[in-house]
Length: 120
Length: 107
Image (cartoon, rainbow over all chains, first blue to last red):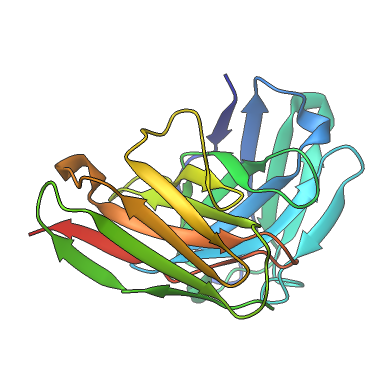
């Protein structure tokens, strides 16, 4: 069974940095794209981007390019999403999800989400 | 970017009703469309991929159809456990994009 387990909720101040994680088990981690999805409070789902763990190739949504950085550590089957300087508008739930096999395929299993709160 | 438009944004129906949700793409996406269900306070769950293929954990009361720009998700007999927001997503072009969602409630 494929499982994605995300790191716990975070409360940060504007300007601080943050790195959240998504640990994947139950499948061949390097060969499936891992995606990140934002959901702001009371709003819909926003596709942020995906990363291919085998070579760390990334595809970002233009809305998130330069705002966040996706990375992986293959040795521990973990994907990361990080911010260098948080803003209040980054307050949201962030989900990771495993994409089905191939570059153009749907998201299959999802993590439970990491709630990020940015407030002074 | 491809824009995905879902309608209606919300609907209320009775238990046992047949419910149809619509998703429209701003350009041809062939059948590169998925549907997700998100119950309140929970992570989204994949229901359908390639426009009409059910994930193997999804009950057969759900069905998807369409190709090109127009797609539908149908719940054949609405039950209380189907109360959720449903999202479509295209994966034909990067960036992959979601529709705004349809919130389904019981009347």
